[in-house]
Image (cartoon, rainbow, N blue to C red; front, side, top):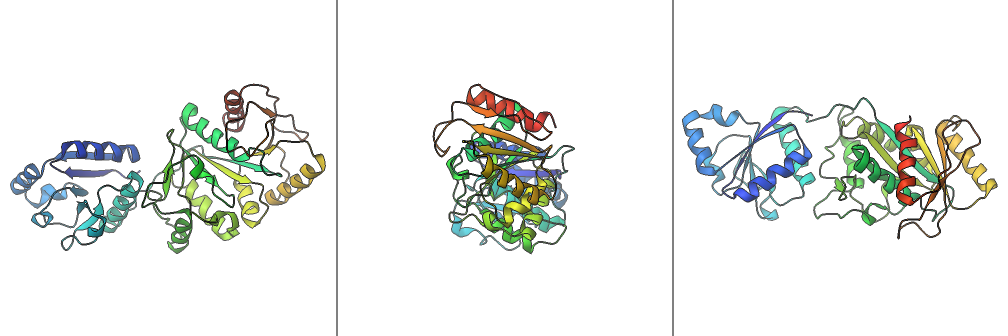
Length: 353
């Protein structure tokens, strides 16, 4: 990630410390300096313009922003209506925006000032795990989110949960702060960017208490559920090359449209979830998987039998059974508690690849 030196100028020490902590959660490569307005102005008077230019950005949380010259000043305003109404040559952002929104705005301003993008380096190991099903209400979404959270909590992985169902499932697990951009807006801006660039993910992402991230829901029909191959072929490489994640967990669900067919080739592991034994329907769905992958699913497929009933959006099931599969590839039989079985499923999907 790009190294950035930032000064936070505020007389409200509690706010300054909280802002600094939030920014460091989002980017460990920030070098942050916290000081008061009078101290900054005094040091600027002594050191001249080179002192202010020693910082990539100056976050100004005080009145009188016009006292400080220079294009690297970002005025932190307390009113959303004042955004964009700061003195000339100054940038303005709303100081109480969610952390991801703040980061996205900071990165955008940094790019405008320097021409450089605060981009990351793709991890040496990047995995994509897809959860699919030939039936609805079998707990596919519950297992996908449980696996994502397990990877974050117990494997220390950076994980993005991606929902491809008609109605996005992320709001079931994550709160959506005001001011967030949605997955639909990200797809739009992604298509409008240059080929070698993509929008900053900050500002589009929400997260749960464990740190699992997901795109903010659109509030209507999920645009990913009926995306075309071209959109999927822009989205997945952009997410994989962002340097932000070790693993992407995709809740594909029971859809069989172009979006679902387009995303399957990116999966390193495919967990086929069902709650009842119907060999004929499962055989037809496996044919769909082979068609989507344009090759045999052996070696990628893990068949997961969920012994509970219901939609999977309520209480966690008591147990999950991961059955032996007929074709060569990973497969074990599990008969334990939900948390233990999810842990073993994650190990089978991720650690043993």
